[in-house]
Length: 110
Image (cartoon, rainbow, N blue to C red; front, side, top):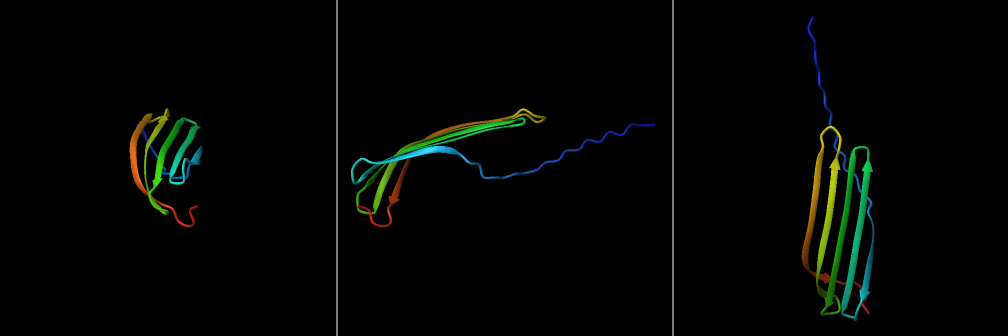
């Protein structure tokens, strides 16, 4: 009599919102110049999965009119995710960049 060997594999995809913890600071240096600092953090450790995220952003806005301005700043993020299970993998991503943008303020700006 022979031997029958069967191997099965199942996969599921899951997309879910991930809450981050962080803080932000907005400080008006003058009436037309605004400083903004933001940082978000996330950490995950479930079974064979580990992951973390750190995202930061620091900008300066200059309003050259009552409702319109421009901004410049720096941004960065650090993402790390790994699985130590049957199919081990590692995602390690760092990003740092400069940002420039137009900004609009709606409503009364005093």
